[in-house]
Image (tube, rainbow, N blue to C red):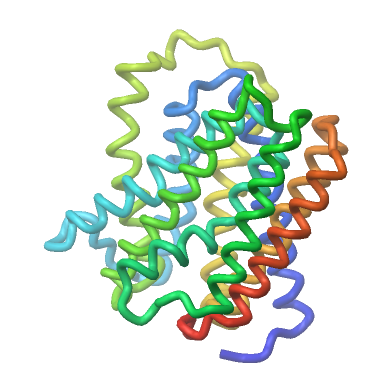
Length: 295
């Protein structure tokens, strides 16, 4: 792995902008599309550049080989379920709030890793970072302008979505010896398989009358915020390593707030800014002491 240069930093910032912009686009898409259909169309369009990449690099897709159960389980927990939960949550809370809540995924993952991975135990300083980070989330729940009796359940659903990302990430370790492109493409294929019947049976999307704006947001989510973003992530992981790529967690909620404020006219309170600062401090302390992450 090489030291990051200006181009590498630019790619990291671009990835943060794309992922930070996904939340207000989820909200706009949810105006016309039900959550399962939204997730389904998103992963269908995301799979296109991934399939092209595997074909171009002559990478064998192993979605249906002897490890198919793992690919299926990861596709369910790391893509299908969290995409649906995040769509449900974001449709009923401020888009920037979803970005902030999702930024705590590394903290949630550290708790799960402590119990299920032998070499990922929480140290004293890592525990301090986790506690500080989650105290920022707790502060958000005292801001009645942002989270109140009408939408607090959807904030919790969003957090649950991030938790499934963590579960999926832990399951992915079972396939750590496989090529990243193959694992991502194979699990995406399985997520389509899971989402398709539920979308057709429960939501009957052919009866919907989506607006052009919602459709464009959904296409953006699939092609750019998922497909293109994953390709950029592959490049960063390959060239600069996992530690550098995880720094995107600091930038996503910041861009989420910027997009929510300027494009969605969402109200930003002082508690939100303080909560974000506390969460980022917690993530920083945790990552600074996370010796388990390998380049």
